[in-house]
Image 1 (tube, rainbow, N blue to C red):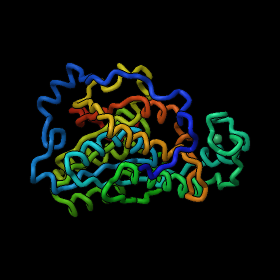
Image 2 (image 1 turned 180 degrees about the horizontal axis):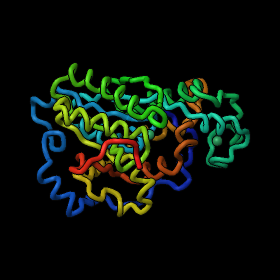
Image 3 (image 1 turned 135 degrees about the vertical axis):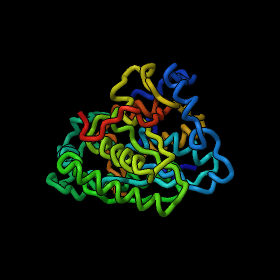
Length: 306
Ligand SMILES: [Zn+2]
Ligand SMILES: [Zn+2]
């Protein structure tokens, strides 16, 4: 049973899933790091840990499907309650312009809109309400496919490109409140120092400052944009504490979550926005049954991404 209809009967992405090796690709450095860092968050949780949630923070709609879904499903399979947080609203005028363009120049015949055409008349200026609403509908469909126990929307305007420090402080306040509400929870963020985009880096910075204060202890970071930085799959996971090999049954659910971002169903407010925004990364995440988990590097530098 799938809650997510596929938009077409053929393979949802033209390239289809690649036949990638499923062996673990822990690097030498990663093995060393794993040896010292492996704990209840990475191994099967203990009975006491099983009652505390694992909280995953997706900076934008689509990041959870691309780079957190396998880890979410790993924790679900281990019996942990999983909460999924959407950090920012994901305002995006460029995406509104794409959806207003008529004949689809972004995806061409991969576009699942009728006739590969969309002229939605959406607002292209901040705060792009239709984009936010549509992206969040995709996020909720993705969360449903992953079977998360709770969806939490921080509903923060994505101001990391403007008032960076202010955005970090807002994220910190929201994360702090969750840490206080759920003592003993583990917290999973984007590895923003690797993702090199302001919003993701701001989320890492919030974790860094809270860890420094002793307010968060059990923290991991997934490299969401591994597919962008490392087109060669063999390069992904460099320096990781842990490379997750996603079991087939869980990978099927991750793929269903990814397809929430490639579903055209206006009756459900679904307009394939994710696929128009980051087509290559969704395709590559769909094809690669792994995720890349890091601990905070010792020389971590807070501040906007370089
Ligand atoms: Zn993002
Ligand atoms: Zn299109």
